[in-house]
Length: 290
Image 1: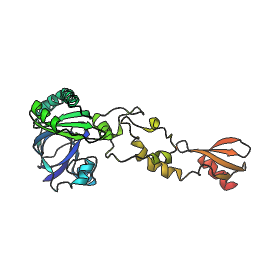
Image 2: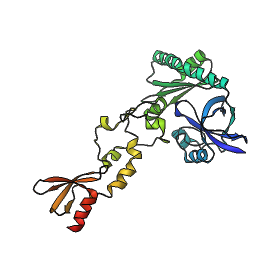
Image 3: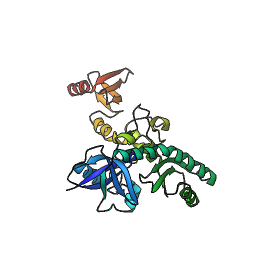
Image 4: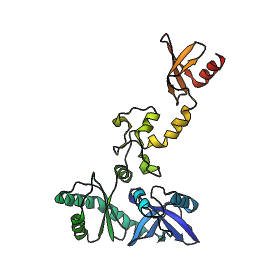
């Protein structure tokens, strides 16, 4: 029996693999997987139909190949995913923990090399492959960077294959994690399956402040919640009268000043300047009876 398995790695990176065994895996099981040049360590994050649905939809990994969205657009995912080779032992997990402990020091050494080469790039994170055959360096940069000389020096220093991967500000926040202005863990690091573009028009639709400091997240970009909450705002506002509209109530002609979709209230003002706040249900009753 062959099953599809989603495996997560450091920084919320995830890829999809086949598990050709009758013995089932469980969520969070540590596993050793087959990668392009060797083996890597990760933990199971989805199984069977759930993993297949996420893989088919592209998810945050951009398809079964586990690449980024940009990479997925450039090249289609492979028809046959790589395999989960075996369950990881306690020794394998200890080796992975040891590698992760080294990665902060690796990042500092890479930053020193970047400074020596005078490159305009910010080193965000470093990630060892479990078998130490590859070291991936994640970085952000405002423009294209020629890092060929840097790669040669890093390969000489770490005696392994070096991959430099440029990521965006949102992807950096997803990898590094943090706490948002709401006091909760970043959505992109905890549960949000896909990073989608967010525009200022979404904030306008939700009648939010257009001050960037008020609607931006820890990554400096517009808050992800502006997008995934947008449909709720649009659908809910359809139940309310539009702001600026004049209604005929038991008081007479009143103009809608504001609506509160969470408290389900409407603020009205008469021609004389008197204001009052009504529940939506009471307003509908008054309008119907007027």
